[in-house]
Image (cartoon, rainbow, N blue to C red):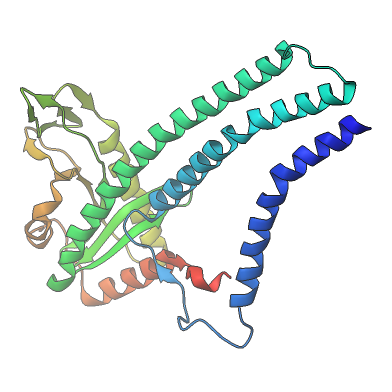
Length: 298
């Protein structure tokens, strides 16, 4: 009986502070969610650059914090449970191997998850920062008669990073963040486009070009169905920070986003009327406007 009560005491020391913290958060949310007040925003917000990656990044960081918080008290809890068990029996024996095995397994598991999450956070951070940088460059097109939308969700588990709509057509922009290798202490920043291949310094990729093409095809199909008119979409791949050397023709336009104003304004492969632009932007606005203001969640 003493062993059981002692274990519950240790468990209470572990759970009561956590429960008090969660209870305080819950009460605060109820208090500040006043029934006699309404949020000033009457509709949801548009998605910003890197919206999906930003949410995934938040989740990964929350998971990492949870594992880091759990790894410290868990071995101490097992040690306290064993000490209370020994005290209730009136003896102190050697620390059992089974406890050491459990603690070792937990430490290895938590360390593995932390290592995996750190890698995931680094990868997501690079992608998020690249999408944010490209989005900021594309937003400069607003003063040149274009409309820009970010993070358009597809019908399945994918999204189109950016969509540009203007008199020269519709552009589906896929963004890829790639780190630059160092050679002789200097960053190698050139990438060659050979048809459907991207030759970086030290490796070759084809998937980004195929992804940009697939996204453009889906967007063209969806916009055509939604607007009732045939909409052509030009696939674009943005590689922020890289100098692009185009060696062969390709259906996907590969760009460095810093000169996007000249690229999109001078594009002549297609053109849109004012009515078509309004119908297309209306559909894109409705699809992207799904971000609920957080302060209204309570």
